[in-house]
Amino acid sequence: MSPYTSVFVVVGVCLAAIGALYLLGRAISVSQQVIEVLPFHSGWMPREHALSRYHARWYPMTLVFLAFDVEMLFMYPWAVVVGQMGAEAVIEMFVFLGVLLAGVIWAWREGTFRWV
Figure 1 (spheres, one colour):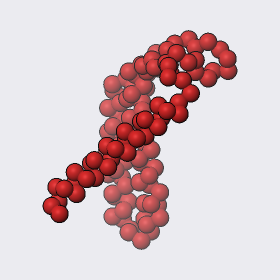
Figure 2: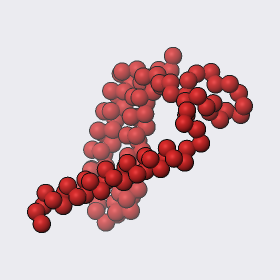
Figure 3: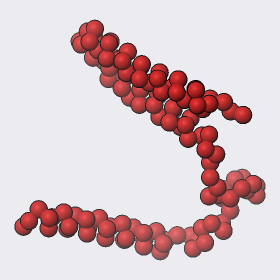
């Protein structure tokens, strides 16, 4: 069997699974008019449409949050091995924190942290 045949089989199985899940979702859904159903909000009428967009000022703040989230993912294993690695690990962490600080300075300069 050629390598391309196996790739086409995997792609076909994936497309069939996606189609089956889509059809299953349509079959067991509560309402066919999802947008017309009021969202759960303690019985209050919604002030805006459920599919309304977020303001663009939230996206840079989200990127800053993700940068610090990734930082914490990197710092936990680093804290475990820093004693074994020595000064090289400390220098590596400060380089990493410097790159993150450059990103925070850029975000600050762009006005990401201004809320008004």
